[in-house]
Image (cartoon, rainbow, N blue to C red):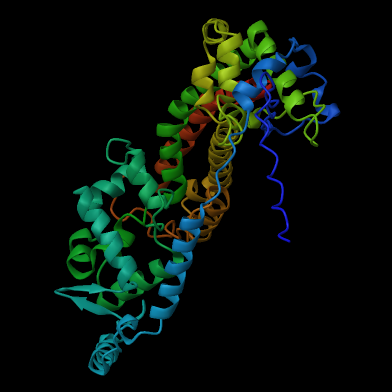
Length: 461
């Protein structure tokens, strides 16, 4: 007997009408802020923020994360083939770089060996045409290039340094000489002065004979002899630089601190800003509830750029979209209540404080140089030789001014004094003392005013 066929399978059930799958809630991005500790909340703008209710239905529209798609099978297979092909071809002879040529190596070694030579140290005289170079070649060449670019005679530079003439020695030239413009100091060091003078004495060349000095020495060596003979050269240049730069820099710094002070007062008194911070705080605590960033009473102001950037890149509108949807009048209200804020955001209080310290240091340096000059003035006025006094002045200038490479200790105040300047050393000291006192009388009140402005500018949120 034949067995009966099996029964047919049951028919497929049609989908139930009227039933839909419940939508799956998307994950929300968190806000990357830095919580403020409770000790820093007191006395800040966070004490009086105006909290507003969080509209949870719009959080997903602005902070919902877009799921990332995985690579399909075809893309994965193609990526695997590419990796295998690249690995297989790595050992091919065609992929190897050609071997280095032995001839090139020998030529390089030969040129390197041939390029070495003894250029001579600073104590080895070298002849440059009819002039003798005594200094280290690189330093002598750098100073010579600077002097040629100025197109000013050495006697004119000497007289300008002695009489504090800002027309011949503007601030940019003084910065080059003192080495404060990023270049090495161009003032003579004591050892260099002794070297040049000993050479001139051995050749029978008088120190005050400028024509003979310029004809027999290189440009840098002649500069050291003629201009370096001005008493208290480095302190004079520092005073001349302070006279030209302090008051303009102080006026600019005062204006910048005033902008910061006005912006700080506007921030502390802005009701719109308090509502904005309250909205940010409420939204952030809702999104960060399951993280260590939740439950914040305030956050670092430096976190604002990250918050306004929208959090993670997979999120949609972010905090900007949320604020635009629920507080459309916010930009106009902030601009009306805080007009000084845009200008203050372009300033950095740390840089302003550094600028104030540099201005204070310039005043302190002039005061130290003036004290040293008054201590040594009786020696000059009594017609003393003044060699020891000049060296002491250079040392004090180096301690106060902080020149590069021994720039303060110029060693240029020896008994040779002026190198041909008509006025005596005493009259030069009187010029320096009078100008230094006049500068300090004008700069000290500005300094006190700036020191009072900085705390007001720092009193922000």
